[in-house]
Image (cartoon, rainbow, N blue to C red; front, side):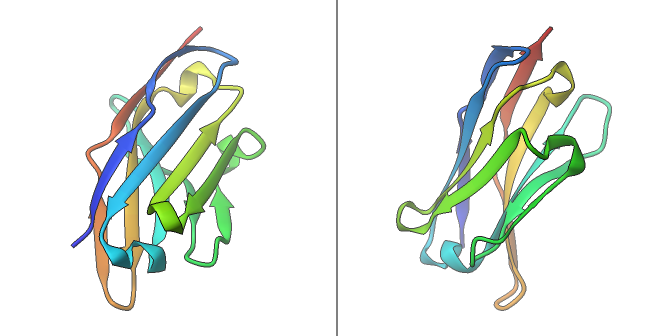
Length: 117
């Protein structure tokens, strides 16, 4: 079992920065692909960025060049550094830890990010 706790959200002006953290309990976290998703009011949840167990990263086009995902397996934590934030980045950001072998997928409760114009 893996429990995920997101933190670092808040209110920021457009152009500002935030760093989100996803802290996990459980030793199997290091084998998981960890992803950040976001969900804006009235919209579907969408993938923002992901990082594999070998630290290969993937980004949605709308955050490339602005967001950076990283992981520290010694701390069981994945980070999302968000720069040059835009009002359209507003939403609840969720962390997901997923593995195919062994099969598991866990979600955190989410952290609110609000970018004012």
